[in-house]
Image (cartoon, rainbow, N blue to C red):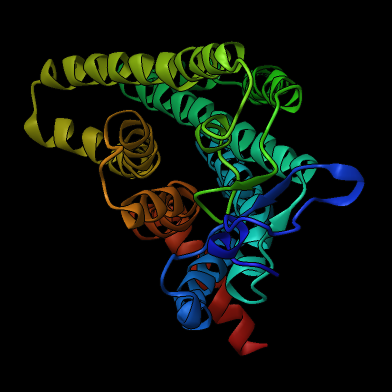
Length: 324
């Protein structure tokens, strides 16, 4: 396969089948000879992310004591993280291991849809987990009556429906756009702003819809997250005992770490695409990789370390496995 540099040279016959434009993924420009070695730490991160989320799901599924709203939301978070990992891993490895850069537009749009659907789903789950902490701290006596199993299921289904309904029009609009003969993507994954920069026709509809999706999903969710934590702080500050207040806040640390690992790379990617056009190309690549790798990697680690119930259950499972 041709490299992106070769693809942009004049005279190259890079038309796809049936005269379709060619899309080329990009690994780490200038480091193509070292792609195999670069892939080793990236693969290790993927293995940890997939195994960690898988263990979280297994432990919550098999331990009856963890069948409560907080852990149901955590299992939904693990599922969305697994979806994000499996959506990005194939193209990442095809570039770094096999130097296979070409990707069809249809495959690119499918990957794009899965990435953003999982991201929007994760944003909604993080908001639901903030609501869970708010109810547990503000109205602990009404916790079980407010967050019933039926309510948790409805929240999960609503989050999934919202993510699909918001994301589905984006690839459809993008498929109607016109592209050049050879289109070199900036990353080894397909992201909406990157594809948008390659459009040769009027891209206002896709641009406006992408902004609408971001504002109506992660934008609204982030505002509600801040409001939830303001109410949590107000409740904690109203508690007479400092020890009780700190104990209540300590139950939110894992969730705050999950929020940071999701929103910081996402905001960084959005900001650098809008205001950092002069930034080094490697900065774009690193932030894009953090956007798809940080949440699936950090969430199981944080919750396994910080949540005593999960940590003890995991250790118990491993000890039982050794004894057998």
